[in-house]
Amino acid sequence: MQHVEICFSPELIHLHELQGKIVVVVDIFRATSTMVAALGNGISEIKTCADLEECRTMASSDYLIAGERNGIMAEGFQLGNSPLAYLTGEYQGQKLAMTTTNGTLAISKSIGAEEILIGAFPNLQATVSYIQSREMDVLIHCAGWKGKFNLEDSLYAGALVKALEATHYSEDDAAIAMKSLYEKEGHDLKNFLSQASHAKRLQNHNIDSDIDFCLTLDLFSLVGKVENGILTGIKL
Amino acid sequence: MQHVEICFSPELIHLHELQGKIVVVVDIFRATSTMVAALGNGISEIKTCADLEECRTMASSDYLIAGERNGIMAEGFQLGNSPLAYLTGEYQGQKLAMTTTNGTLAISKSIGAEEILIGAFPNLQATVSYIQSREMDVLIHCAGWKGKFNLEDSLYAGALVKALEATHYSEDDAAIAMKSLYEKEGHDLKNFLSQASHAKRLQNHNIDSDIDFCLTLDLFSLVGKVENGILTGIKL
Image 1 (spheres, each protein chain N blue to C red):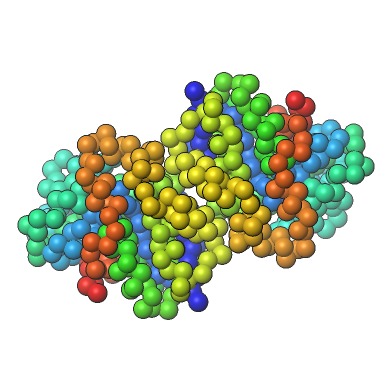
Image 2: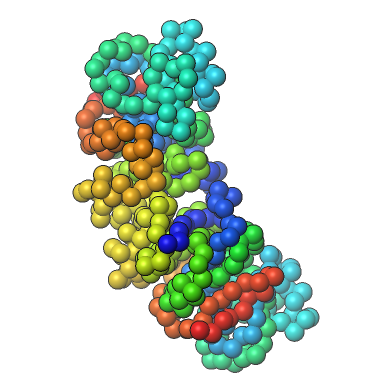
């Protein structure tokens, strides 16, 4: 069997070995959920940018540009960080450049891994199937919120640990904790998360339907994989 | 109402405001449990030392010296980190100097708080009563294991959040997660923790009875409080 572990924040990633592992980067509200929605609706590739400036310059290279800071669309950008914007399919075939508060940082801090995937509830089962087709240890890298633990990323991590249990054991305390918590709270995630700080922030921005989307399982049968800074979808 | 939050590791403590708060430092296996056992059995004060060298020099100032690294008594020390060593009362009235892998670091990184307490299951209710007699926000600072999240410290934190719920609310994701996990797993901590990495390490050192002690609730009606680097017990 392979091993699975969880890192709760990019601030702790230096304590983990990346080499030889599949790292699954998670930023449920909303970066990685939006990435999966975009790839599932015809966006051909996503370039993740470290900051708004770098992202802005991509507009001149035929990229759509999407950027938010603290949950709000950044000035001069065509798209914010809502997954729902992609569901109409109107951006089919286009390339997207994207920067977000926490998600992009977690991806860039995952460099050194054998493979970098991005994970979200809407493609959980596809990610499980892909991982189980490879024989590698897994590290789930939660983007967190400004360096701190956050509930939605960690619960996704618990869901993934549980879904992998036929092939991946865990002696990692974080994985044991989050698997157990997901077993308890997974049947009604939205209600449980409604207590959480980040969900409250999102409610303040009136994006309740974004939350519903981000917590829906298995809408897309594709895996998001980052290579050389470019994220593409692999259809299963 | 006051607020309660959890920091999972000294590596994340810079993300938290300490000022004006009661910080409860937790290192269940075994530093803070041993401190409570020592204070509950007549040790008059405990000096926490940053390293083995500093601790060793305290022997010449009439201190008993206790030190471990990676769970094993350090060379030249009179005591390791077992709480059971104090239960006979043979060290009554003596002063103790102590250094441990993770616990001492968490205490030194808590400087700046209004008050620093040390917490353990054997004095949980006393700590709750003391906190509820003050009107202050609480930050539970888990010592973790070499910078990482650990299960036993975090579950104690969840138990404390739950025990404080009449007076302390929480919008902190870590506190919400650990309170829920403690509600699920708190009735059989030893069994749940037997999966955990640190408990496994301790079992390898044949200290099963230490684990039993560290997970026993409310043996002592005293609070451990650090002032100017010296820890003393306040009897309630």
